[in-house]
Length: 193
Image (cartoon, helix red, strand yellow):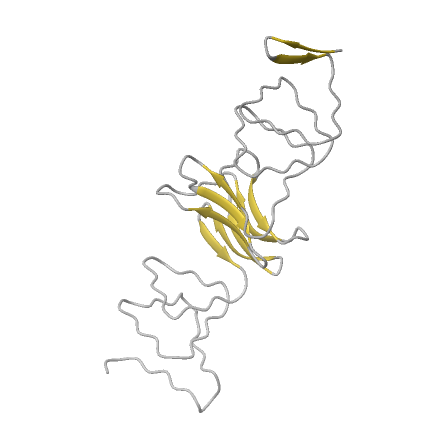
């Protein structure tokens, strides 16, 4: 039944098939909406919001987090962005096995293991990895300049195609050979220029 008491409408249930236009504040204990909700202004939620499936946003829409919207997540027609536009750092933390940046098919691009190696991949293969004693490079390393401040150990062949200038002594192990590329076309010179 429907009644009016002190200017208030009271009913056990209310089924309305048309529009409702409310001027002012409407206090509802529980709202169960079975259709779409269109809001013309800001939705203010005090408390936690739980989504049962997903949050669907269009291109260019922004998820803003923080009092000054310092962290922003957005997608345009071609790219996705995570932006830290505040004064602090963007920090990714893991108490699990680490952090991974990968392709959509699961192929690793960067793997940062907790208390372990940070590995950089090329087409699914590790090419550079940190280790407790330094780094491991798999494959060829190209550098325009290399400055080694300590000893270098080469387990293999060292091929020098340009001029090598040494600012200190070069020591060869007992029984080591110095071999030129081909007889008659290369010279080995030692002394003062």
